[in-house]
Length: 202
Length: 202
Length: 202
Image 1 (cartoon, each protein chain N blue to C red):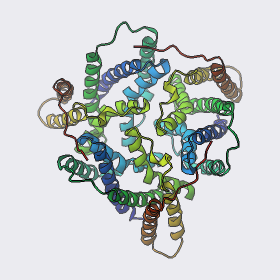
Image 2 (cartoon, chains in turn green, brown, orange):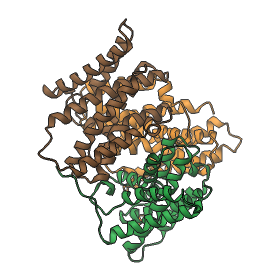
Image 3 (cartoon, rainbow over the protein chains, first blue to last red):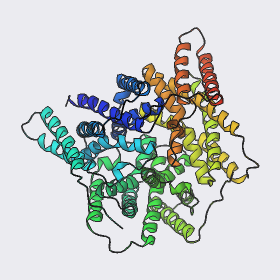
Image 4 (cartoon, chains in turn green, yellow, purple):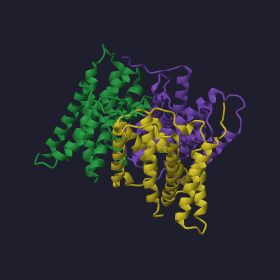
């Protein structure tokens, strides 16, 4: 399972980028950019580690992540945006981050001894709650609660795909990467063809 | 004190039901229903356990709770609502959950060695913060901060009633159940006769 | 470093007062006053301790703080406000609390073995997140994310000043107090002359 920290590290930058693009859309200053990027990148994993009582938190132990996000935030604050970033860039960074964090989160939960169902929940939470906390801090309804294309559902299904693949003769690393790619592709397809869940109306 | 887990378990379902009814009022999909139900049911107890450094969290150790809430959420998502649920059902489920969680939360805090005042605070927090976190996630002002009939106050008074009863010759179990019934009844009476606290105007 | 708890205790009352004044501006009742005061006073330090895995939380171990805040909240709820509190009082209480909590937070983080950068982040978080959590609970955009005079920046700079001073022959206590005064003065100057950070516009 030694691949999980690598997956986590890539996910941090995918979500930090997604957070920075969101913060720029809101005309924030350096403090806003940095906090939103930090929260989007570390929020889900931090909540998971608090709930699983894992410590120390990786971003506290390895300060290079937070320093790199500070550098990225400075770049965003100082370099004027020349034209809009295409919405597709934000979408892909976010879908890739979702896949990376969900599978890593589910893996860490299994290492901590949870059941498969709880591990899938922890995976989905790792992948989605950075964005939820960001939206809450920005005083917006989290998109997780709006009638949007499948998001948490892709992560949940991908976690169970990962659990299934991990029981086959495939190497553990390959299982991880396949699940990540499937989650990201599932999410992008859901956006492309607007797949949604039915709504429970009152 | 072995009765506390039983009380907690009943409270989980009372609050999960209250969360599902709230989520349906907001026309949410399965993801929204499930997350709102989970947060309402586990939010207060999870915050208490994080603050008291109790682990593992009971819903992580016993995944049957989360699985049951997933089943309830599926039922709510798939079965069309035939007519509105009477507001009274939501109110009673919530008042009962408040009583159960507050007394259980205060009991766990005492077991962790806190003072009575902190135990009462932990009890009130266990009973009320699932709803607060739910309201925050749904981007609404928590009703705890609005000029509403007594809610936290009922839980606070009920916790001290429990501390008092626990010093009498009554059995511990009876003290627990009396305090729970009094909190729920106090809350329902406050709604019925609109008992409110005075407001501090500027 | 035995001075940190003293600094923390003064910070608790500065922020509790700031929270009570904010809650009164929102016409809250006793429950609202108490919860807002508690969250403003304990939120930042509690989040820091959860992230650093420090326990027990000081306000759980020493219930005198919460009891005192309950007393202050009762006083605010019962004593009618005779005229508005000058905005300057709120501003100074908040600036002093920012200085006290930031330096204490950075000190506790160093004691827990973090790097200087993470310690500065923890200091800023201790000083600012009580207010952020308060704003989130009150369903407002945290002022941290609005184009406001320098706030987090003052705390961040002050933490590094403290790290620098701690390497000089100055006594540790003097280093702490100088950094606190500089942060509060820097913050008040930023408000007075409206120093802001540049904004990253899309």
